[in-house]
Image (spheres, rainbow, N blue to C red):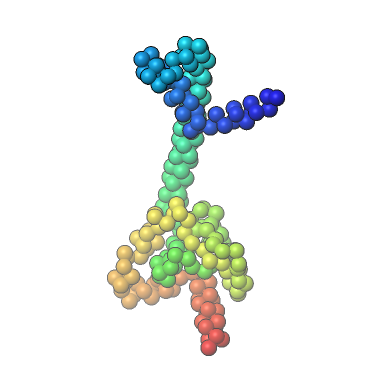
Length: 205
């Protein structure tokens, strides 16, 4: 007979419904009697006033508890994001030349994703530091390892700049001598992947 009660309770304790119930019951309890009479609810106020008052009290308490829980969860989420961001900034500030060389490829190739062997120690290290991430589930075995498309993570992307990885803001500002130095410092797998892609294009033709 009373099986509907749990369902009704679950429905009423939803945040939006709690606010609606609190406002409606609060209006009956707090508004002047003349206003209540004007909408023909004076009997509700006189005969069921204690029930309405109890509903108002409970719904207000539940609503405040929900707001507090939501606010606490949001604060924890923001705190975790801030800690992650601070940790990533420290990591980016201590990158070694090999790690910077891999990240430079995003600017040299002018791509949001580059192909890299995910089992390469440097690439794997950048992935574990949450600077890059694998995109796509299909890899390709090459002489340098299992190659996957990788991209900068959403957290790292705004902070990885040309200056951070030892490049000027525009590659057109690089001198010929600097270009030779950068070319010599490119990751070992870049040439192997480039040669493989060139052979694939030649085979298509």
